[in-house]
Length: 353
Ligand SMILES: [Zn+2]
Ligand SMILES: [Zn+2]
Image (cartoon, rainbow, N blue to C red; front, side, top):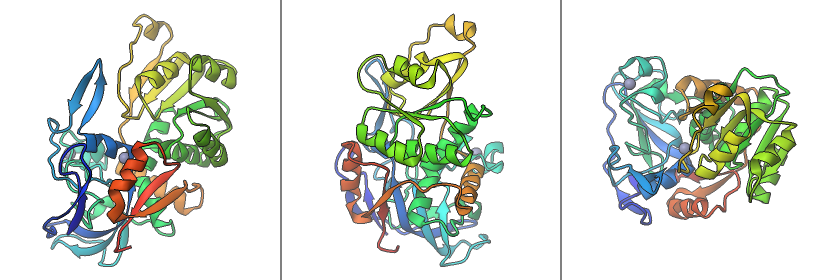
């Protein structure tokens, strides 16, 4: 198999040859057809997360091994089944749930593999969709996209489940209460689509880019707020008619976390999703006095993916704008994302598509 892989952290991706995996047991081998390019790929490529105060958390120390074919928003065509794999046939097109764990613990067996303590996620700890082939450990990790356009379906595996899972953490909430989304990139636009599908009536989006705010409005955001400069929390509160109950920070850097937190009203919740990095200083007495919650949210469960795809199949989920790029240009795509030149989602299209 070919892969456009990280060979050295922060250096251009290289096209390399890797042994094509042979499916054993319940494993299923797929040929990649589409793979989304996600912001977290940039962190994996760089090899660290910024944990604030000038400190970095190395991905190598967390078990990421190079060379690595990144890519966790994968759609592929089933090529070969292990002797114990059932339920799919060669030629079937499937979304591959990438947030894998050990496969045997309580979390994994409840289809909440993303909460497993031994992560083996595709495109992070194992080769993913920046390669021509990908191995799913079990057919249950494969979801039929049905009538959903495969390039769009690919984005549900990360960006889609991530926002669904984050939105569930601020629910239930009155449909006329503001839900503030920070960041109108791929995650933000998918979050708008999911909230619209849930008939939420007050979707507020903050972003520094006028172009991205315009994209958010086209996607159905009711209010947008300029997140550049000073006084952002104040602008959000003004736009929402007061402090807010729910903020979902899809960027989650020191600056966004600060204004997101500062915009909360009593009983409010800040859900932290992005991996931009930095730190947040919490004034401890304020937490109990104002009964605040700060909660992290990591991707989503396999159940979330099935739920999302079923919403999309019913036509209730507006597809986010995707642009396809040949898989062989994975490095260019990644650099465009790094340079902030992407509105919506870039999706690699493999030769097998
Ligand atoms: Zn992702
Ligand atoms: Zn597990």
